[in-house]
Length: 172
Image 1 (cartoon, rainbow, N blue to C red):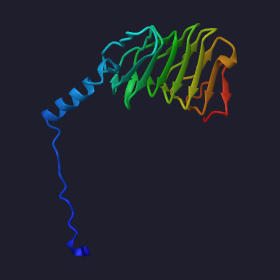
Image 2: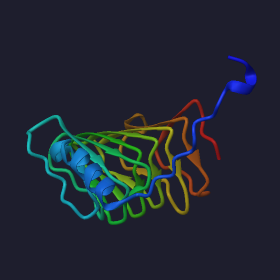
Image 3: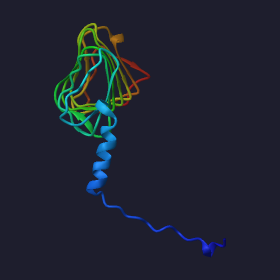
Image 4: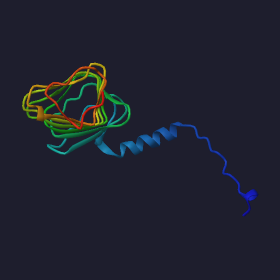
């Protein structure tokens, strides 16, 4: 084929029709209870190993009762006060209100954004990996400094952390 004979495929523009939206809803629904839409409760049906994908939108407050993994899709946020009291893994959520970590909790946060204070009760443990602390956010740990560790985080709030071990420093 010569260069002149190469033809480009026509660009197809597709409307996001009702049928397309219904098809997408069926595919998301096929994932089962692991998908949490804004306003839906967290369904922790198992004693351990609960895992949920939170879709974009406001999920209110986060309160887990069992060992749970929460993964936020882009735009997922918790606008109310949140509390964690078990072994948790939280990824990609934006917390607009305070976050409380209980005395028996062991929580790992990955790429989360905090807008207000994270309060840790003595005995609780938390690790923050690549998280951002903005507005008036900071970690206030009532326990030992090794119980709260931050690695590769960003803090633009200007508020200092309390009793936190910074691993590799922190961007400010």
